[in-house]
Length: 73
Length: 185
Image (cartoon, rainbow over all chains, first blue to last red; front, side, top):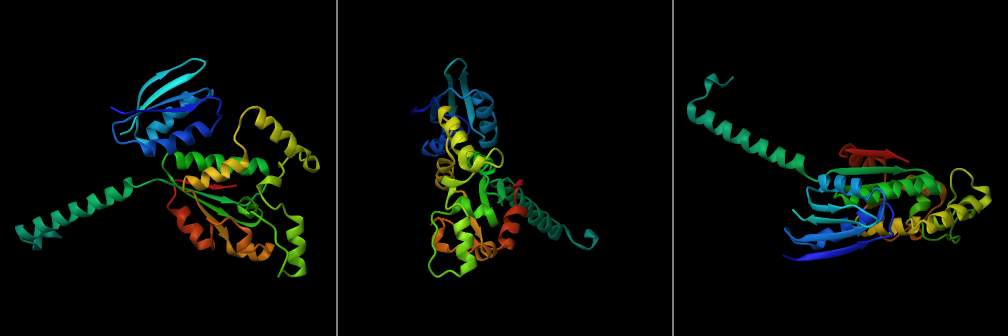
């Protein structure tokens, strides 16, 4: 299964979500996008994004650098 | 009402109703829409407008921004003076020529506020207004210029971004009436 990576470290709202919104269009259904970000509101924002776009958050790792895996539905 | 129909007719009616309901259900699931009526050219208000527009587009909504009066500055790329009447030339001179020169609604201090907030935002790696306008266009946000206020403020089509179009209030209302999110900025 193809995995794509996206670096959003250092970017502040709304750019991480905007970049993810753009990049997810390049994925096929079932592919996974791995994103790294440092924005403080990233977790809550990406969860809201996933609910609205009906995509699946496979995993989320908190920390100084937040890592999320999103599966395109 | 259905007492006068035979079984076959009742079945046909049921089938048609089911089909229509399925069509309506599909229509309801179509993309959510967001419309923003932008009247201000304050730096802080335009930041708000474009952040919302970008985020709405990023979550898959169909976004329309309708720029009227001062809001036209947000989609303005240049200032031209030829072929304008004297009042129009005056208004053109007094207005900002693009989002590069818009001031915050408070602490504007004759332009210092803009520089100050611009410096703060850059330090915190926050996207600039110019960047947000470009990204909004890339994400397919529909940008409409109010025809009437263009005439009042002496703004010509050539002074606006290439990817916008001119329309009136009824186009705005059509978009707004279909939108879950409808904002006035």
